[in-house]
Image (cartoon, rainbow, N blue to C red; front, side, top):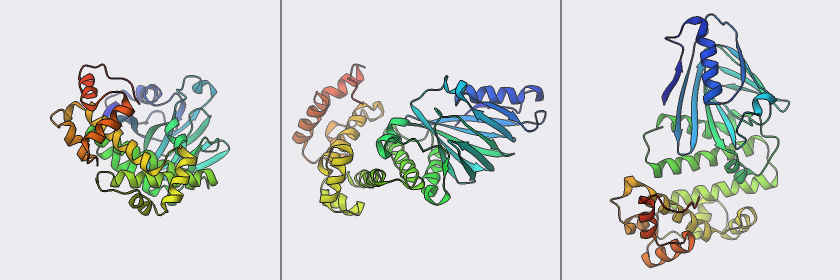
Length: 319
């Protein structure tokens, strides 16, 4: 991660204001007050994995709040994941308070006011996740803010830490896979923390099915029954849930995810030496004629034409 601001070489009288301004500019508008202004120290680092932005904040004790006047200058299309790596954080939103200790995380909606206290010498990871991606996984909910659980969030929390360790070291294709896995784990943990009703239970199953496809789809002999078994359900039940939640089926989901990985690989200049057939085979397609036909049906042009248009900077927006 790259350094954005550090108080080490800043005059003591300017340290806190410099740190606060950096966090406001890079992360989110807010107001904060240090416990000890004259002795305040703090750092801010930034990075990204795929389209997910992540920041690391470390600082002396501060009280903070995010109010309506800050919300007016906040982008509405993202949610925040707060993951505490050291220290203590208490944050309140929607009349609910979450107390985070090392390893805990909470989901925060920046379009709703929140406030809190970060204890002395705390270290906090802040991950910005697309609101639409989270809602696609768990539905649109108004009660997500300030939920925290060490039990339900442990896997997602560990994944967030590991993800930042490898930030900047992954290929674009790997970053895309890591991003999707991260979103799936965060959504699943939030569902469990919220004690989600029926819709979210189905959404949790969708996450398991997608994870099964993710881990198995490179196998050209993969059957839909293999995916269902890995997700712990029958093919019939999996298809019923996928139809209700996402309007798809196991076979269509598998084809869509394979095509998406192939498309991303064709866009990636770092994979220019790999042939179209190598890319198709690597993501589980065993018949190149079939691959070319379904790719054209999905994206409007054959795979080779798509790759050429990407190199020329003229490929269509298919995201």
